Length: 197
Ligand code: GLN
Image (cartoon, rainbow, N blue to C red; front, side, top):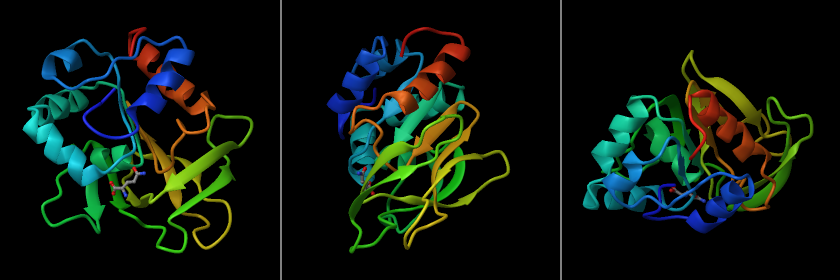
């Protein structure tokens, strides 16, 4: 669990409830011990600056490129995106997901909103909480779209994706305590050959 910034505690609670050994990661040695990684919501520009300051940027990039299953939510999605629109001039990302995301895409009027979304592989819709969220503007050929906004101004916008061992949502599945999306990720970690996260 990337723990330099963001809503770390909420993710840890959901993962622990699922029976996962989830630990905060602030140092390279702590990352070494992990078989999967969650990057939370928060502020993506602060995240990359802190990752640089704590010498975690390169180790994270290396593990992500090396196949470590990683799940990014909101700012975490931005961190995993190869391309960012409306980022700050010096914004860097870890990359890995062949997607273009637009930061704060939903605009001022709808800074934060909630809704029900169909999510690929889940029988019942999920309750999605968006907080100054990005959306995915463009996806590469290897990217699977897991969810789109169903109705309203942003209808059809892509808000959840997966590409191999990487998964990301624009919204915050850790906020309302429904563990189903985390379960999808934990299954990904387990199928990549391990039982802890
Ligand atoms: N707007 C934030 C960013 O660009 C993301 C918001 C969030 O993670 N809830 O990093």
